[in-house]
Amino acid sequence: MKLDASLPSKAFYDGLGYTTVEATFLPVENGRRLDFLKMQKTLLGK
Image (tube, rainbow, N blue to C red; front, side, top):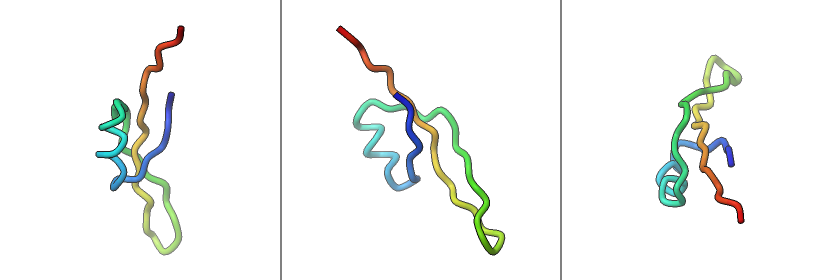
């Protein structure tokens, strides 16, 4: 399972067993940027 997470939500997803794959960003208006994390978790199927 892969997801993009905001920086403040990292601890929440860490607690659910996700790991951070990459810290990245998207450029937005006025020279600013939106920082976020790409996270993943392996799900075990039956």
